[in-house]
Image (cartoon, rainbow, N blue to C red):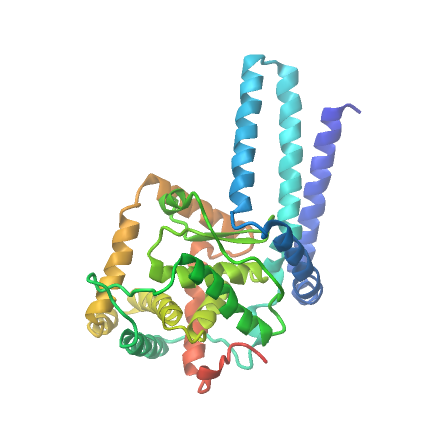
Length: 368
């Protein structure tokens, strides 16, 4: 058996094993929760975070850049002296590498997609919400935003001012998330790296990405070009992925809790603002008249913030953002989140439950 045949055979074997593990994991969520998400994954992610987190640079970006340079050099070398034998050889190497990366993705983090739903840790059920519950939730979120507006400073453009810098947001997002992780038994705890600012944030904006979790380096990566008032929520969302929740609605829920229970007005504002956007989007789809009734309750500051955020993303709307959106949609569906990018908005069920619970001021979505 020659090298090419060996590589292809091994690649097929790896893909079959990975597929089988995924199939079994999807049918045994309780086992995944107990042995992978709560025992194996925390140790693996802590190790990777320790290895790649000691420098405040996105290791994932560096790895991708090096890989791209390597690919360009490989293609250049092939084109300078092309042959059928070399093409087959390089293709088999590429297949081998791709199969190993695919397997590592699932083993290092991806199996968290098959853990028990987040609500299985709560003391009450998460139910599909009615339009009345959505309205109640929106009003609650809006009331809290108005309260926070009286405690925050706003600039000449009616945008909230953060007294610290970006590094403070990154450090605090980790500290605040550690609080809810410390009182739960289902979130990975330990000395994890803080979210990292991405050098290529401009490209992230063009692709319509606010952040990304790299399972190969256990890094939470942030697009730091987005409006600053959105960064606390995005940072907390990516940390939720880092701590073991792959689902987007679960990550949004945990990000919301981390922000609004932080005791930091700016973080609270970011959390309530993000929650309000998701809830009012859901209301708009069901009852446009009610949506505009709620919009009439918005303050001048809130209107300015929403317009600022809209204008920011509108500036990047184009072919690149459409490609990024579609790729993210396909990726989420391929990992078992069949709603694709719509899964982000499904957090409204959690938010409604948070508001409905009479003791919501005591981190009730975190089982102590």
